[in-house]
Image (cartoon, rainbow, N blue to C red):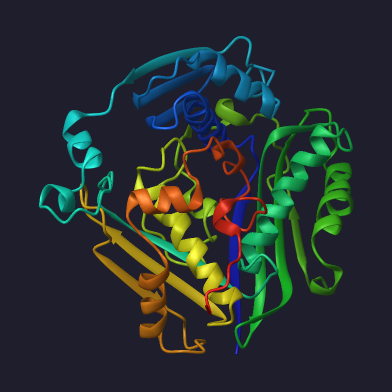
Length: 382
């Protein structure tokens, strides 16, 4: 049976990703000075303006406005007539401390209060988190989102390296993969929309993108005479960034995870310290799912955790190997309980999540990257 599946990605200059980067930059700055910082930082970007809000409880002393301007500069935004200028934009800050009602459950878990002595903080919120892995790529990621991220990252590379010096920071990519019997066999469609200077000829841009971006990233064996390419299909993309569209932290949750190939619990990642299980438990779920596949216990694995605010241990664990498991799913659940402490403290300690690593995750997906602690492979058979 043949079917098509599509995933999208965005460049670091997308207005939502601009906000994500500022949020994660504030988080990392706090963690550099105080590893126990509680941070929930949200950013809104609009025409010539950045609004930073949320809750921060930390001993760190940071310059939030300068952090924001540095992030905008790093992306490459320096023109208020086309997108936003890091030197001239207005930055508004409205940050308070974490609610004491939330802190009650995070500081000490319900289990500790009831004498179970699990010695752990409680979850920072209720919610469900999903982790996923499959054997379609060496990175154990679905092929559509893997390629979409590669294309988006390459768009940024050719801009920053001057290979295509007429490009601007904003952009999107999309890849449609054709599957036969659940295995990827070819690329059906590639969409690339990239911001550019107004003098750029569309015919030149389209030729350059195919040659310097698509052909450099997508394996030739997956392309054929029937692959369709849509490069800037509207014909013009000069106005971009927060001038073309508003941005908001946490609005690209599907881009950040598995491109829609796996389910999503709904919680965003950027700007949240690891006491928020929206982030830390999703990372742990990915780590375990990846190792289940890497240890050949299944070819495809999805894990769901659920938590209650103030409670340390997960309320439930769910496993689905989509009929590809080498052992029953009940045995995999037993392996998880045997090997991992899934309390917030256990996850944070195991993955080293108090370190300032979060700006590394902001762009081109939080999963499938090297040198992130939830991407390491361990032996689950011992």
